[in-house]
View 1 (cartoon, protein in one colour):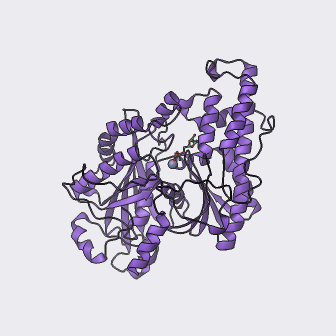
View 2: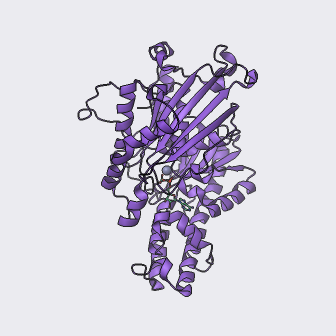
View 3: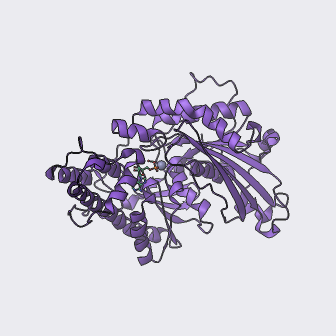
Length: 484
Ligand code: KG4
Ligand code: ZN
């Protein structure tokens, strides 16, 4: 879906939608008629009912001098929440006098359903893993209401919208389909263009929303339930993959360890484990750091998981019957020691890979000044602390979105939609009478963000390449060449 861009001539077709893509960075001074513009985003997330966007974003500063506000809601259905964000840009030179000549409104839909995303939290605790069919059901049950509720909360009508942004990958096909189907129905009915969003790109780019000084190129460590990526972001849509995981992601290791330690998974495995680890001695168990012998930027967490499993078994901790809330002090201390030791080594692995990635990235793009960390695990305070040390040693700065924007959220999808939208990267509205049973939706469950850094390819890599979609970067770069 992404990569198709409207030639400007056809924009008139959409003028009744009050839609014009303005490349704000480049055009602010060049375009006299568009000295200012506003964008209104409406984002939603099939959601974790626990993770409220309690503090709605009230004001963000941004590179393009904008003010913003957000409203938020938590659906009573307990599985969903939604966020609406309004952002007004004004041209730096205009001093805000010539305001908002155009208004664009983007609806963002996120249903990629990686691991703990969205309604899966409950499913995780009950079934010990993501049950795609049940996740799909959960999304299906609430999607219409979520969209409706989000519009109501933002005090908007469908006709106020200018585009729809939706996550098309990577993620679980069944879940992605729910979002894409809803987005296409909605966009078809209200004649709105669509922006297909890469879930991991959204994790990285949300940092540019909250840190106005963050320019390309930058280095990004994206750590979530399903992904462990070290990315050199050279430009919007131009990413080099310096490293990825050869087996499990760090979030998966946190979740499994938390489960084996009998923690309350309803709060999410990662946060529960982080909390317990504060009570433990991080040096009590000598887990070995993964992939020491591989001098690259790839990750592996399967071996560490096995080490943890063995440590639990050797201490006779029975988590089947004993949940953490009902155990004695000694047992709790034993579990806390495992949690702390696991966390220390899991993060040490990140630190070592980041050290090398910084060296590589500076070799490719010497102007880099920032390391972005994002994804659910980046909300972990210990991770932040340790990586802060790493960047300081290397004279870089750490850019870390607030925890609520690190874990899956609607704002990141809407923001990524806007980033591409303003460069004209979107698809035309789908036909109003689209036959859903005959249309093959463009879903990209396994979709790399960028091409692998050739010199960093690991001998240990066993990445399954079957049915991997061409990377976002290769698609966008091909389209850029075509339109040059
Ligand atoms: O990015 P995310 O919200 O969803 C995916 O795209 O997977 O990341 C979810 C992952 C889960 O594995 C969750 O346990 C982990 O992030 N996580 C944490 C913390 N908060 C969330 N891991 C460690 N410490 C945390 N505080
Ligand atoms: Zn995510």
